[in-house]
Image 1 (cartoon, helix red, strand yellow):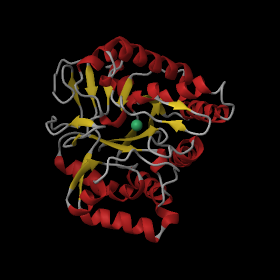
Image 2 (tube, rainbow, N blue to C red):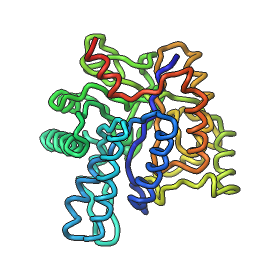
Image 3 (cartoon, helix red, strand yellow):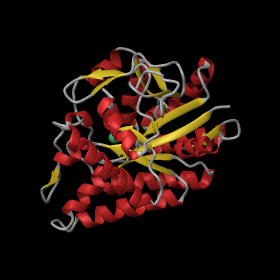
Image 4 (cartoon, protein in one colour):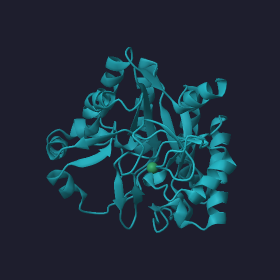
Length: 335
Ligand SMILES: [Zn+2]
């Protein structure tokens, strides 16, 4: 029996255009909440609270942002009430981004937390965490870094300690990317489905105070991507993302996906949802632990993915245990 964690990064897009709160966040999330309602399976949402903080900052100046602010705020409160786990997701570039009356001007020159000077990093972390707790009236103890960027861990470690963060779910084993925006290297990660750590994110320390629950990884073949791009064109009603924005473009990825194998997180987004049963089987077969963490984004859900996700839950919920990270931490407390 595996513990399955369905996790969702709750955010708009950061490319051009960013898309709207309604289409990228609240409408697709409502669909996910309907699935939770029907199946009784709660999910973990990593809330991009920096966006809410910016909405709050600019809504006095631009009345239309009031609508987005209320949509976001009310839905996160409903998510918590429904029994979902709402935890911290920091995209620090919100600090440098602003609304000009028409659109968000996203400045990603400081995309990673460690791009910020130490005192600013710490005050931001504390402010974001407290804002989320005030919103949900629940403790925030788990974290997922924006864009998988949490290395080197040293400075953020102090923020974890100061703010009572106990669990992280950022790593995906085998993942590696270094370019002008992203920086992560998960090629050397313990062969476990969770581990304690302290000094380094990818180094086990049995006495470490933090728990890492890596996102499961899967190898996707070029054929999968030919199908993904093909179906997107042939059946847009099933395969077009519900979100109306575009991701940050770094170029050259599509070609790479179509020509070589890719090591990527197990995901419930779009066509990736097709691979959930196969990826779960592979994880069981590996025999490295009892956890299976899946990442997703409301903005990247499609009609197809929502159908596949619900099928996956219904077909596996008797045999496996669908969980949230607050349940992990609560059960440890009792031990
Ligand atoms: Zn994110």
